[in-house]
Length: 379
Image 1 (tube, rainbow, N blue to C red):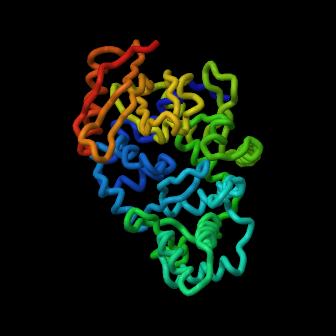
Image 2 (image 1 turned 90 degrees about the horizontal axis):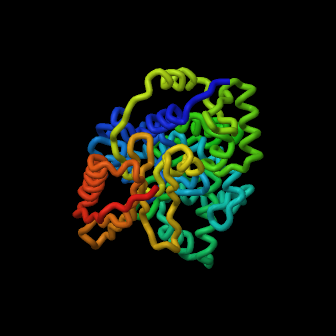
Image 3 (image 1 turned 180 degrees about the vertical axis):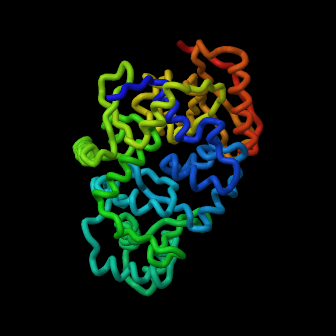
């Protein structure tokens, strides 16, 4: 069983997440491949997440691929809304169906479809796509239906995989029948078991050596079902166990990534780049359980009660070196960086200047002027 250092493990992750300058996208055509590589974008901070992975990202690039049906939105990975590549949607949906069945309210996948569902599906196929409000108005026209019925029927079909969210109209999602798209999403071509194996391997392709607990957290699976998939993939020799220095828990790695991990032992690059990460960045979400032990800083996700929209995590190479609260209200002209905390060992003036320049780059991207207070040092 191979043993890897934490630095090798982190290097694998930041390369696969396209955070290193060498892995940056450069043109509009790189958008789908980067989204595919990093496991999709969490909706809300998706433009910031792409901005951090391109030399000079333009928001219209993302719009282009959404309008061309290459990207869609789906409630996958712990039920969060994510922007993913359309051809991968059947795998994400089937792999997380067990998670969806445990949800409450309109995010829950129904056990089966009724004749009423199928009748409504036929209407969407013939007259769609619809925004939720358009669908409600269409379905209720001339009928004595309650508003709740329209919402329930639409979301049941969505959670079951018969309709998909592709594109937007007046900032509202458009729901299409999967059979009516310019390309047909074959939702029945993959079984739940095959999809779960695919998503397990997808996770390892992004993050490298991960524990069962890490994988379960990323997807939203229970530990029991994660262990079941682990056993299947071990028997198929798709994954292998590995050790990480100073870590007692067993980690898993795709067998096809063994050569890359071994090469990092001999050629571990030095980095001096700075990234200002949004709350839902793939690095922060996927590595949440190990941010302090691996990346050196106890960054925590902001809660609604705190009134913080963006608690930026500051990445310097393979280290998280601090955080800051960012205020950038739509009507304000300023990009206000406050409560800037920095690890004492990284308080070098050159590093601080790099961080300030990166915050300024974000401000320009959002069409605002940077206002930044002094840093506070923490141990």
